[in-house]
Length: 173
Image 1 (cartoon, rainbow, N blue to C red):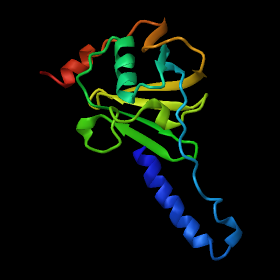
Image 2: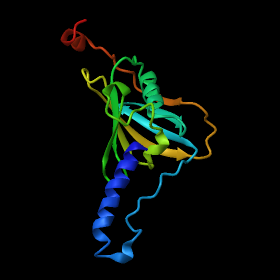
Image 3: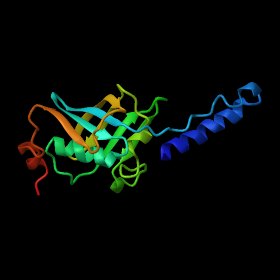
Image 4: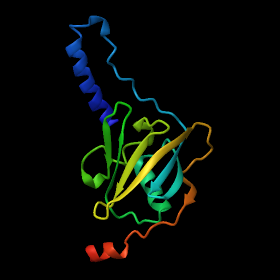
């Protein structure tokens, strides 16, 4: 919601500039309020040729999605991360781990607030030192699904080692 409000203010400023020139456009530049849709998002999460299919209810937030990705790829959850995607207006939205201190935060931003549409892609950047970059594609939004909790539906390929030999040599404990 945080980004939506900021964007609405910017959009409103544009409308003030154009009103004297086009008075009939009084409400043309008003962004629609986001509408909560109950259902389940079906994501294909890829790391190169390795992928997982994850179902997550619309009531969940991006922190829950992060947890599901890390569980699906058998990674631990002790690193910072962020999600990024282009919204329907083409603006890049970044949703961050709370310790990054740059809102919006994953634990406060529900997946439904992102107004994702089928076919959209998101990036999940995990562990900024190792720089794991996952690609998420929203394959389907299912309003009739009976899934009530985050579920890993399908797996393809063996999960990579989170800390391969070369990483451990570069970042010794």
